[in-house]
Image (cartoon, rainbow, N blue to C red; front, side, top):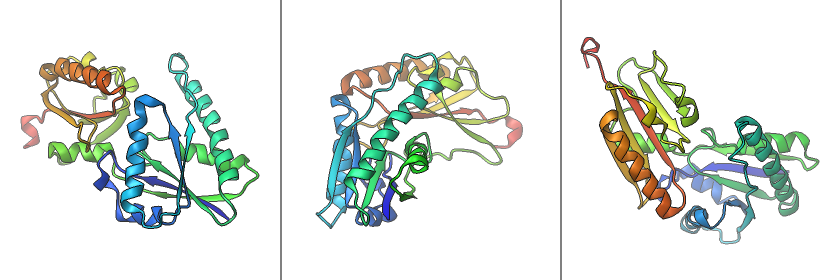
Length: 258
């Protein structure tokens, strides 16, 4: 039966690739890469470099396919994403059917980890449910930008007995939950942290984590928000894209004993 591997490759540092991922990649016949245009060509290049560095079997192929455009202006966010996933599913189904024979193995190299804010697994579930071409798929975990952020700032994501929430910039605009001391924010295109006026919050921010373009900043949110927003805007203009992640943390109260 055809096999499809979904392999997490870390947040940008080539050395984030795990031994399990390297072993999995060496079983792959065809790598499927979604081309997101010239602005993000270096993301495709990073995947190519990972293959060249770690794969000893040079008979593999890399197939690049243009990623369907997503309607980012639609006010119906969930509907727009589901429509995008549906069109991606058509592409995935065609690739699996046309590019893999009965005994072949294909793979998607996923930035970070396939379980965290990535749609590849949901799309493959759609394909498996409807496709006339049977296949099985497996997941290889990867290092996320959340882990890389904590490592680069030399912090733990939580202190003793505290909770952690991982959310998006879109949800952050609704405010921070009262009972969560540590909030990790991903997919924030609008610097939503700038809307929070709270002297008790600290921010640990990182962009292009693990790469040569990495940018880090930390400190009291009210003091660092404007500078981070400016740095983010400049970096995005320069490269054409940006991936950033940050942790918002409430300062420990004296009674916490921390």
